[in-house]
Picture 1: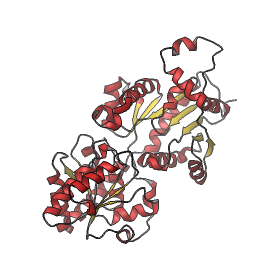
Picture 2 (picture 1 turned 180 degrees about the vertical axis):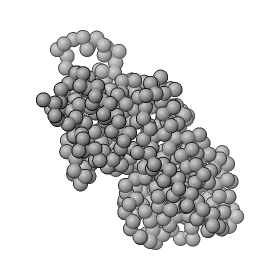
Picture 3 (picture 1 turned 45 degrees about the horizontal axis):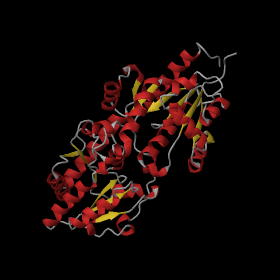
Picture 4 (picture 1 turned 90 degrees about the horizontal axis):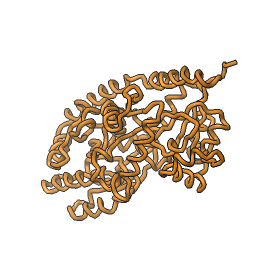
Length: 402
């Protein structure tokens, strides 16, 4: 008895339009492939498109459906009557997702993103991923505040983190924020730094200037969904300052609209630079490498962090990075990026002008970026995950025989 592998249910939620979050989940799946000889993984997803991808990396996959009854149960579990209902033996509060976990004899659940499904579990332990706590860093932004979004996030993190077997954070800054804000045992929080997305490996050398109608000599690239916190308007202000000096530079924006696109385009019209803004939507993966490679720089003036994936992609491809001078974010890039004050667009305009005039500066940044990426990649992420799984497996023997 007791020779079977521990079974881990991995929840791969969301879809391609999630952007960086989707790419992060793909990256983690590729990491845990290295542990398939020690543990058995079953991946749960709500998207048939995700299932197609999972088939290519040879994971057993179960496609789930979102059910209205589960939504009702989820609401019930989160109301004040929760404790009372649990005392009623004939009230079935087990959600459809957990029924699948039982059918597959799953021992531990690993959520690759912050997922409300964690709050539904009655009989399974879980690992939860925290990408950011920006609703606490910058609560003034509509996307983390309006329509009770702030309260929703607080409810989730307050309950889900304290019950988790382990919490995955992106950085030491993120880890410290989790511990400080939610009273979590430091030994429960593990740092798994972001990696460049797998899609940058597709090195198609295409003429992106021709394909996307970029007519200026130089362009900058910013892959980001259109949330207010992504701060596209800062770039527009800088482009306008350069135009006033007779310097014409195109800003290429890619990503899906989360409600702020019209504002950004209207702002560009107001500043008189709409002709220098190229919104290209959600681009095919095969174009991403060339969009980075041929750009003067990746410019990412986001408020949210503490870490992000695009700077790592730029480092890997060989593109200079311009990034905010904010706590956490500046630690991610070290000395490998030009930093900007988000209150002063003149600083970005100056950096851009210097990059256009100095190939030496560009090459110095590219080399520093490569070195910084080596430092970031020195973390043995597979060993971090294995240590979490092993620790749980040892404890599980106290109540379950494999």
